[in-house]
Length: 144
Image 1 (cartoon, rainbow, N blue to C red):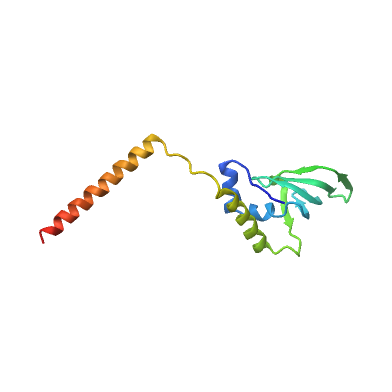
Image 2 (image 1 turned 180 degrees about the vertical axis):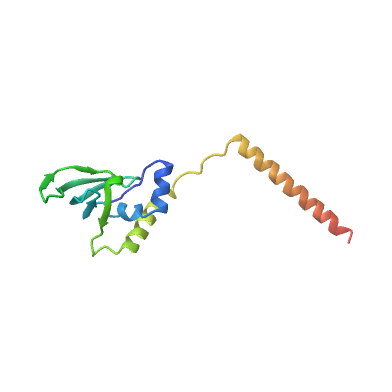
């Protein structure tokens, strides 16, 4: 299964700078998520987005009273999550490395973004300044 992380720049920041990549690595696996209202959800993770919202493919929702409800699709907002149980057979550090490596490999094939005229002009001025400083430096050393 080849996963691709797509999101806004903010979501990509969260992906690379928080433990979101670990939760993203759990896609396709069965997990348990404890919610803030003392209920929990058990099921197969379908999609995790950049705000840690989780969509379950098949899930059992257990409310605080112990009642169980079966759902084919269930969406849990990230702000309602208290704790995510990571299965014991999944090593967290290795899962994060694999997830980040897969995501980085997908982005290496992208073409570089062309620079704007303003950026090209600023770079050209910078290079001219560096060249003139080098010329002055070499001219100054010839007198010694």
